[in-house]
Image 1: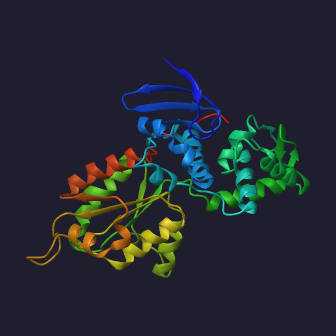
Image 2 (image 1 turned 180 degrees about the vertical axis):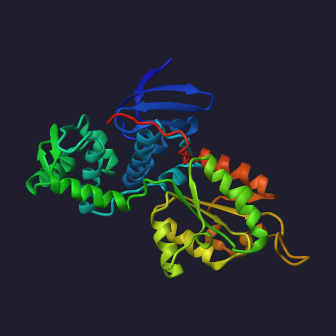
Image 3 (image 1 turned 135 degrees about the vertical axis):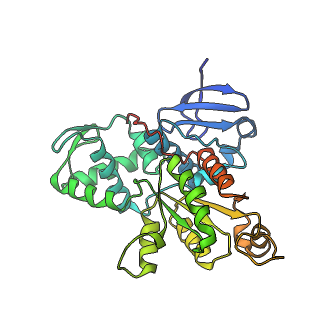
Length: 325
């Protein structure tokens, strides 16, 4: 039975119900999500800096819009990973462009009127404070003055100029299903990709991208950077300790792309008597040790574990749903 409660992320009225050690929330502003019971009793939300709370709200809202809810529970051990999946606009100009995309997505055809039902919910999508709707009103007013919108905060329609900006902005947003895979390009790793990484990603709704298997005439470094930018997630297998994989993972993290790291717990492809790859990573890569690294034994083992990891973080897109504004 649902109870009337306060949202853990914004403090507004929400409904909730407890199940095992989780409390499931439905908030009109933030969306649908679950929180570890210990998180609630400790009052952890109140101690988070506003920027981290805004990122949690933004991720939950986006997941709710795309999948009906955020499937990754928020808790002491997981909240940072959930927040790291943010796509927070870099500046005010990016916020205005993002709003045009959101309004275009809610317009059934050119010239159609788009009703913004909830300014607080739209604020959450732009990583703005939902209780203070002055910033979102300012953005809408500015877009109207500059002829990107025709109307006001209650009812508006995109102008031709607004549609053009929305279209060009959408091309740079990570809304597709590509998953970039960084790994050791060695023959012994082909089965790892074909029978481990690739089927796990496809089962979760992604199209795996491995640069050495794509035909192109561009400089390979440019091809790598361009495809990381447009990918929705990054999977980096650290087996072989290839420097390029560490670099690519750091590049993806800097862009706010969810990064999942894996590594062989044995010595696949190494000379006899070698230390396991997993131990070598733990001993040598200090900056990586703070992240979860999924160890695997066989390609089949990796397939199972990577699939579970993607779903545990709520990153699977195999069953998208459309939520109302």
